[in-house]
Length: 603
Image (tube, rainbow, N blue to C red; front, side):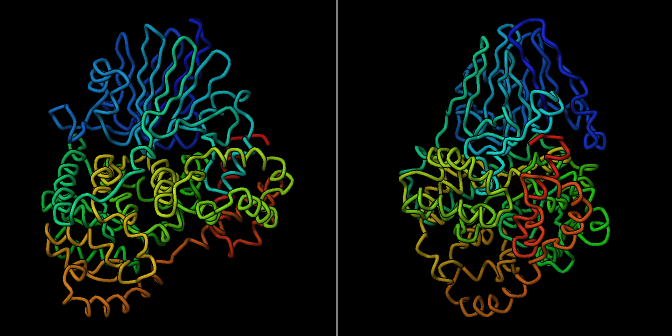
């Protein structure tokens, strides 16, 4: 199931929502999917799936169950059979364990369980949830959906206005500080939360707290024992994640995450389908080819050149459509690649997230923007906030008058936000933000855009793996002081080199996009070779890897600027003038405006 919408009312004679709430939208008309309509006494539930036999939807006399994403039994849990869980099995566990269900399962999910007799609903998000659910509690009804755009399609009246405070917070920090959305009255269920609805009363409670779980974290395992345990868990995880997932393609890049996956698979899927995407000259393509040639893999790179450029506009629009306002136009590459792959595959196995716990956060620009970094380093959050506001008014990409109008409310939200304002220091403060919020806002864009086409299986963004990894000496959290030493920074990647070398020595002897062969990290005798290779390749790799679609982004904007220049909230003349200097902000703010316009939302 890749999308759903639910309407539940207190009374037993509801005005049922339009059955075509998804189908009538142009972006859905281009997809191939089946729709399940479930009419109940108090409302209607709709689920969209690529496959009619998708086990993520269950409906019988007493219950309806939706799994948005995927679930597994925990490797160290009390359920003996380790496997992928579908809706029927999730219901059985819920009926036995109730809200304690989350302690027995793992994965990347939002699970919805509706009790028809009681007209009650329970929804659970996983601990680091990328498959978020939006909700609105209005009048005597509860509305939930995986799509923010669907709220406007549901009601032109109830969900017609832009939440300007949320727009400004997004422009400043890349995310809403209070789990609100770009549409007034609509909120999002945070990670590690349980939403319940019974007798018309809505409750949203936290069942898992990253601060409590990791505030006392420390490396208790020595390197050799740690690698042995991580090696075993990741192999078990790969076996688990690939169970019940027929039709899986394997991502292969020049980096360490996907190569570690390949090494751990240890030849079990060498006959599978491997892919990557990028420019022909990009080292992610070149290195992946070396790996595929060495292991004789069935490898297919998607080259982002002539046909990609010709279809960029259309694919960029689809990325914005499915991205709910947070996915920029340059996510068109996801649509281009996965639309093609969806004809043959239902799943992809990726290395999504792995290195974010290993490499230092100073290199994680996609997760921590300038303002977030300033707040995390601040000794006086009030003063820092005023400096951020002053800078935003000076740039004036968004109306300074609106910024001034909402700044007090935004500051209150900033004070209450646990990821940005807490008493933790240094590395731990960055760890909580990066792991609890940064990865969510960054990778959610990818998951949202991919979801109608393909399901991304990512065994690194796995709660059991994270718990174990934090007991080892490898995470950057324990190597915070190494940020000033180039050699110490290189050594951080030794974690991957150990896993790759012990499982496939061929892979350890092929250069990566980090500009050296993994095996060079394992013995001091290789140090001279590592230094030579690193300084020879690093600039070449960086130069070729700096492709940003700038021309395509500009052309996309030119075709739509007449629609945007009339807006009173955004100063599009200034945004346009700063296109080259602030390309990321340009792409972000233009894409958001396109989404707001397409959904006919009012300022």
